[in-house]
Amino acid sequence: MSKNQHPIYAKLEQLGITLPPLAIPAAAYVPYVQTGKLIFLSGHIAKKDGKVWAGQLGKNVSTEEGKAAARLVAIDLLGTLHAALAATGKDLGNVTRIVKLMSLVNSTGDYTEQHLVTNGASELLGEVFGAGTGAHARSAFGVAQIPLGACVEIELIAEVD
Image (cartoon, rainbow, N blue to C red; front, side):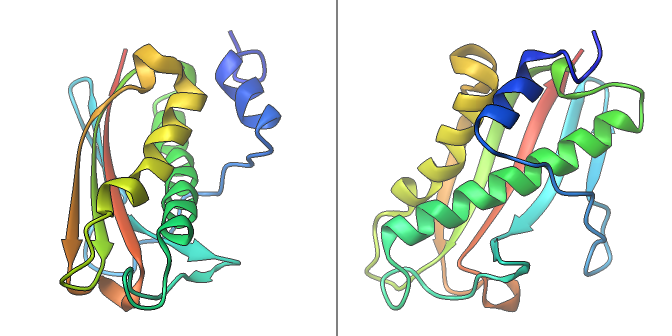
């Protein structure tokens, strides 16, 4: 089945999502590594209108804005996952499970809604892949700072066939 026929790509189109191209790493790392059936995606930071979405939850970014930022990070992660799979002749239809997300939320010491921010990414992955494949383990941490002052950074592990 070609990617244009796979239901995941139809779902992305229905949601108005265009997958971004593979981003060039900003430091000494690679965007993804595959070992066996697992693909590990490096952390992606929140961007808005092509620029770093900077800010701190509990200070100058609301929980709803953070959730929107996490959703945009998930779209970037899907673009990287798509590129990783395309490099081996596969596509998002070959994802058998989103295994885990790790979310870092740039937040003040008294901010406690990191889990709600991370829902922005988790909910999108559930919408795209469905309840079975898209359901995943995850961690959501509050941190003092993220590179470039971004409000959210998320990494992903996926299993493929």
